[in-house]
Length: 409
Ligand code: ATP
Ligand code: MG
Image (cartoon, helix red, strand yellow):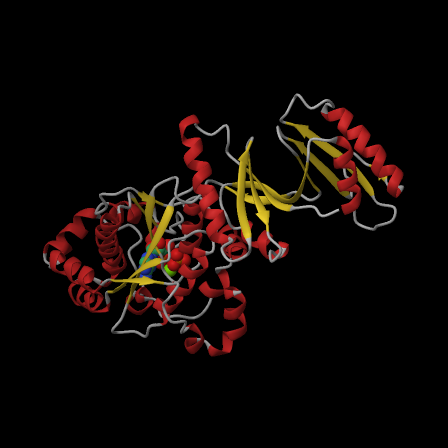
C-alpha cells in the first residue's frame, strides 16, 4: 500500500483571541514554509485546528523535524499518514506501518473532530487495538505505551501517527510587532532576543563595538550570534555601530566611575533612533537584576531615563545558571563564550558606580556634545545582512573551528 506522508502541526495558544486567529495561522504557515524551504515539503491544507504539509519524496523526516522544532507557535507535530473515512482502510494502513518489534506495548488514542463518523473514539480504540494486538501479539498499556497510535478523524479523512513531538510553543514570529534587541557578544542578550521571538515579536539586533580602537572580534561574534537567532525566526538584519571614538571622548570627559552608565545611555539613545527607522516599538536588553554593577535598580533607572520607547528586559528575573542553560539549548552559548574584545571591556573602569545619581549624570552630560555623538554614531551605523555577510569567525578563532562549525550546522 502506497501511503502519502504528511507533516501534521498542532498550534498552541489557541482558543486564541478570535479575530487574530487567521493571521496567527497564516503567519505560522509562512514561517514553517520558510524554515522548510528546499526540503520538498508542501503546504496542503488547514483543517480543524491542524495544519498539514505534504512530504514529497525528497523530504528527509529527521531534517524536517529538527527544523520544525525551531518554529515558534507549534505546540506539537508528527509525521502522519492519511486514509479515507473508512475503518477498514485505517486498520490496513496502520498495520502496514507498524515497526517490526517483539513484545512491546501500545495504546490507540483516537480523537474525533467529525462526530458523524459511525464509530466514536472508544470504539475506534477498541477495534483498532484488537486488530493490532491480533497482528502483533503486543500488549496494551494505556498509561505508558512503548508505541502510541494516534488517530484523528476529520470531516473528509483520517490521519494517524505514532510519535507526537513537542514543538517550541510560543507565538509565531511576526504576530507581535517589531522590537530592536541590543546584542552584545555576551551570553545574555541572545537569550533575551530568543525570548522575544518566542512571544511572536520580530526581532532585529544592534551591536555596538569599540572600532576603530579594537579588533572586529566582538562584531564578528555578534554577526555569528544573529545568524544563530535567524534559525529561530530572528531577523537577518543587524545594525553594527562603531563607537570607539565616542567612548574615548566620554572617557576623557567623565569621571571613571560613571563611564559605563554613560556608554549605556549612548547605546539607548542611538538604538531608539534605529528602532524608529525600523518601525520597532520597543528596545530589548539582556539585563538581569543585580547581575553586574551596571544592573542595579538605581543604574537601570538612570540608563532608562533616556529611553522614549519601552525597554523590555525578558531576563530581568532570571538567575545566571538558568540563562546559561537556556543559551546552551538555543545554540548560542559556545559562540558567546568565545573570547572577544567587547567595546565595554576596553573602556570599563575598575570601580563602576553601582548607584549612579541622575543629578550627577545630568551635570556631567551638560558639558558634553551629546547631539553630535548620537548623530556621529548613527552616521556610522551599518545595516548588515547576516545571511550574506562573509563568515570570518574562523579567522578570529581558528582553534575553535570545530565548535564554530558545529554551531553553524
Ligand atoms: P550580555 O551577556 O548580554 O553581554 P552582560 O551581563 O554582559 O550582558 P552588560 O554588559 O551590563 O551585561 O549589558 C547589559 C545589556 O546591555 C546587554 O544584555 C545588552 O542587551 C546590552 N549591551 C551591552 N553591551 C552591548 C553592546 N556592545 N552592543 C549592544 N548591546 C549591548
Ligand atoms: Mg556583556
